[in-house]
Image 1 (cartoon, rainbow, N blue to C red):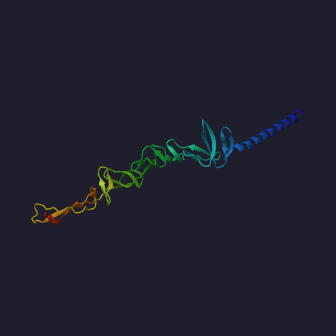
Image 2: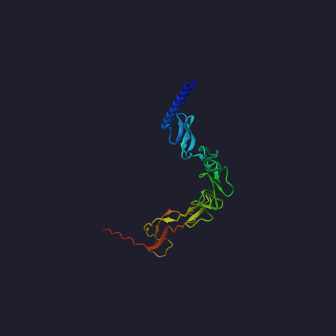
Image 3: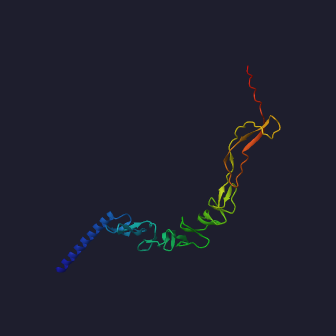
Length: 249
């Protein structure tokens, strides 16, 4: 009689344990974040649903598990038959596609061939904006992309992101800045009225003189700009007789 009694006791214990597991699983399914297969209150996700990546996130001083469809920046996804996880990129790599292929570098490093290098090989420039080794256009020493130069070689002039041996039309070289700057053409104001007719001592005719008019330079030309024309004109004139004063009676 003792053996059957012991069997019943063990069966009851297993049944109770199964009910507790069912309740715990049901309770966990209600509090687990989306994507979790199993979880705990303290540790977050413990296992993920299929095709999701397991990732440890910082929650204050603790780490909590999360299940994500894609890994966050600075991590890449590794799949396996048992579990898919998010793995951190290499130290100098800000984002990556895999362990050996970086897609964006941290400051001070430059992307070349999927790796982050301290310097770029010959023929390429270290692009601090894109953080990658960029092939510049001909004559360019530093560029932000192939067709956008920011500094030319010593003998070339800079203009609109390009390098020129000679400046194009309507531009002229600035040899100090080594840039092509717009030409400035002379701009004149309007003429004043003609001045009074004045007789000069060198003029033989008694009643012949000269009168003058002027205009101002509003904008001086640059070195290669159109020069200013004359600023004054002189023409001959006839001096009018002064009217006689009326005789006194």
